[in-house]
Length: 602
Image 1 (cartoon, one colour):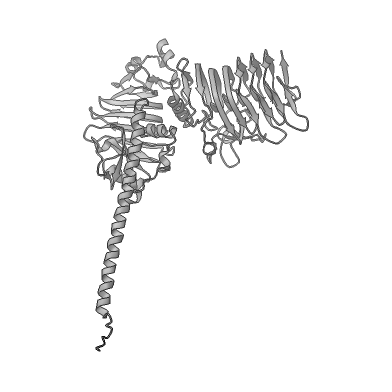
Image 2: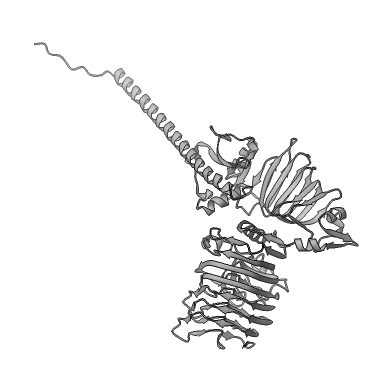
């Protein structure tokens, strides 16, 4: 029988097989990668579609004028655009928002991705993270929304829109028009804005706030929906539209000014009359004669900053804290309006750099949910805007309230109802619904390595001499802090008058510190240094708990003389210290320091 020998593969055959396997492997990898990329894009497409469902629903009830508006609406629904990442980000995809069509889109390699359209590329605000990315998107004709962390101080933009987002470090925006007509949206967040576009068909819509704005336009115009501390108008037409409050410091001859029903031009008291055209001033209710600027009675009545909803209240807080709202000395709420900030992380009005002063007239309004949904770790971050350390006294901690830190001028707050208050600040040292802290003339500072009152106000003789007047306030809910918790004021150290009248607390107040200096009160936790203290016709109905000093009306005082008149406590007062707990319905005579304390209770 014939035997067959086994035949081995030749070297050539092996090489051919290996080559075929390699080709198949590469083809498989390429196919897999293509499949993965397609899946990533499909995921992003689904995400954009879902976001647009939110936008469509929100458009029926909310104003969406800028990408920041839709960002805030989504945050209220628990969706933070800052934390959303595109699966296909590494493939060159970025999100955008069409401000005209009110919809999200995808952008691929600096162009609209397949399946997305826009009437004009400039209608789409592309989300830019870096200067290089922003420049590439600008060159492609997109407007820009700058994501958090964008750290370039000066931005130049030509014929396109810009929204600086949550960034506060952008100090200068220079906008110029192109040869064609440009309708653009610009949103600033402090700093200066310069607009030059003399095309009569162009239109600039400005939102947010700016410390200064310089405008040179054609006959179509700049339209302000912003708070502007100091505006210079070289030429053209300017409209103060809805939600605007614009301070005029220079207006050239021939300029046209126009106010809408809810827009206001004001001429600050320190303005130079020679720099403001008398005809333009007269068109918005001012007379200029002999170097004196005088508002008409109608103008004076209209010159309050009007707050109608949560967005306008938060916008005012932002503009004041940025230093852009310092010329506004009277804030007025719409009559009996209900403002729900339960889902809006509240930012207190007034920081150590820009302490609040002026009048807040509540007009019977209700503010619901103060303190709820606040990320205190973020609010009290490295910039320490609300952190106060005494230059000589060692008082230290964070301030919180409708007003965080008040000073550098008289403060009056009246006719507000606070409901569903939900404040819980473990590191809060001066916390209340109305005012957290009013500093003294001893010039408090922020910390040893951060400039604050002590440094920035070193030459001020008025920082702590102002008066604080609070009246007709009602508070309900819960307020919890480390120390000096109350419903009306945490710490009043101002050396002027301290007057609290006709206030009622129904909130439960707790100071959680375990040391033997814990203080809490139904109305005011601590008063010090006042030239005149008066607490009158106030009632506490809530429970008050602290380690050492717990009282229904006033927990503690230092170097103050005054009167507590017609005040009543109906709440439970508890001091938990094992040694000398000091609790009282109104105030205890031994709850004090200093030699000048003389509190009369009648």
